[in-house]
Image (cartoon, rainbow, N blue to C red):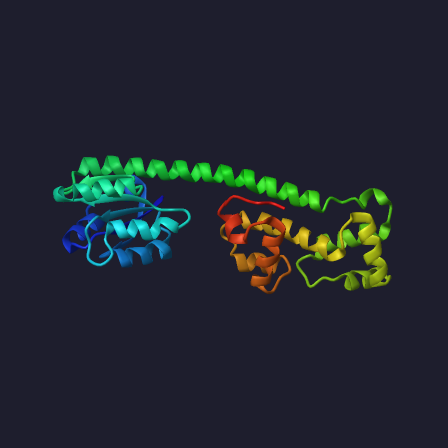
Length: 266
């Protein structure tokens, strides 16, 4: 269902929009109703409203200011404007700012339903397009990182390297170091480091970091896993440090990657 927020300063009008419109039948879930733009902005951020049905004239922050304030939100909510006859110039300006449509008060029920259903279709279309784009970018990102950590040791016949790679794959989420892996292999850390560099072209830490970043990208595809949890599941107890390493490797912050922003992969 589409998350809908109502912003209307007139109490009676707000109550009617909340209680008399069959939002669920139109595939909406009402996530809040605000009496002014300031409260509406808070609710947009808190409840991730996808569509905002807002009066254009409200005390304090009006509908126009609300649209401007929400312009930087990703994904940006879609606005349907409620306008009085005398507010047509405002409505025209709202359309110029990117409003989806406007409705003139008193609102006709049929026109409201038709407009809101079209708005819902637009949100679904955006969501579908964004999902396809994100999948494409994710696949490209994973492919690039795989290239960075391509396992050149497989053909080397070096049992130590193969064992080290297996250990990384099994224990990457733990506090792992070349010395710790070398100790389990009964060789020195320096010797493992030299073997690893010769076989993979990367230091142990570079390989481990890129392996963890590949796993992080896979986890970030699931929006139910918080970024702090992704960090922990990939062996980083400090989420800020994890974010720094992720950006250095992938070219995006974890949040940017999750929301499908354009990558400058390196």
